Image 1 (cartoon, one colour):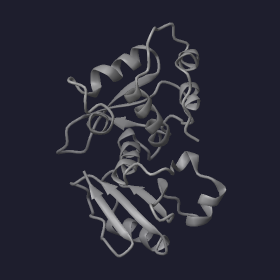
Image 2 (cartoon, rainbow, N blue to C red):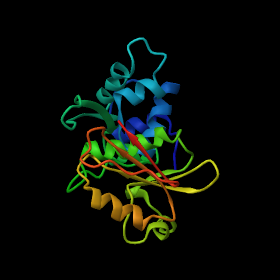
Image 3 (cartoon, rainbow, N blue to C red):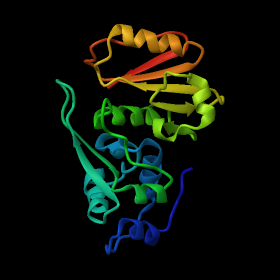
Length: 209
């Protein structure tokens, strides 16, 4: 559940002595971050800080200095530039906003988590959007043993399974997941130079960045 805590509470969770006032744009960013867990500079410029002369980076780095955010420089696949992104500084700050920090490790890189979160914006910032770490028992009934990376609610109330391919899925792996979710609407997101392209269908859309 997205929250809107007072600045003093946020700084308390950050164990910060900083003096800062969160703007409307800051709060919009932090509330979206509670859903996506990580947001890159391009997205923040487009959705939250479009009116700032110097864009998002300078302001978000002030939130880093205040102990609210952590900046992450993400290595991208060959042919793409390195990506600057931000996540909550720690779990305590994240929970104050109703969120979490990315579950990076194993097969989940920061780039993978960034793609999953980017789907939230590609879908127009739906009211309901949950990444895998926040799935409910009802969510799990939708997909069985093969879990997607996120679930969203469409404008008509239908569930949308979100899958992020950081570029390494084979054609067979994609087909297996699509078959497992064939009765659900699917949104796939992958880099333009992915090893295998996601085939589109009546209930399958794909975004390439």
